[in-house]
Image (tube, rainbow, N blue to C red):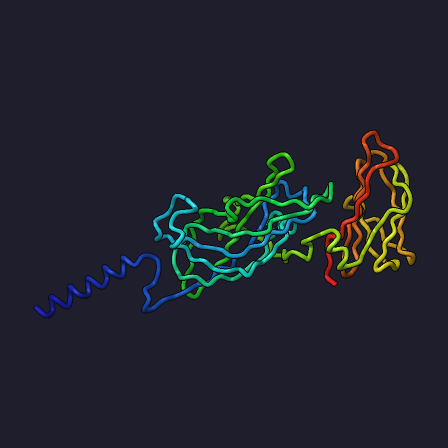
Length: 303
């Protein structure tokens, strides 16, 4: 009889262990690490000079929560939530396969079926107008269904792909891209952390004191001089690009002469130094010729 009871006890222990699912019991708890990357699928991103997104935390849905429908509000209490220390990334640097590491999350070993990314302060600078616009993030979080396993003591790379979409009337929305998210997506690891571009314009310009301006009138089909100064002094050897094409460097007087195409609706001049950059734009009035509006926006400052 004692041998029979011992055998039954052993069977019961095996059954209980099998009911524990993909996670190991408290007596021998194991964890793994999710190396969490963010990437961007090309959509309306080409309209942005920069698009900064702040990731505050990520949440992983264990397979045993019973929520396989993708309902974002269901079983919130069953999620494994990890803070990401308000990591800010620039999605314009993360196009295609480019992806940046935003954090390493220690999670219980087991199977997972979904990932949530909590996002704050999504905003960017439009190339054409230089305007700073907010990008809507529904419910301040993005979600994808993706099945993956984290083994005890193992590291898993997970990339969460997102994209900005133009909705009309100058509005933009951030959406997840399920097909480009997961643990089996090839990525090119880059540093996509956002530079100090928040508050681009007067605030950033005051920090860097870098300024670019046109000397004289800007006319289609004519040459125009661009003057670059910092703290009121000429800046020599600053790299200058016009509409994305490098045209040269400023001389000892901080100036460079560029050509404006005869069919240009606008001209975008970007000036880069070792510690800052500024963008100078001129938009022509309809009908061409002389006239229009020039704006200068400091987009990067690191000192």
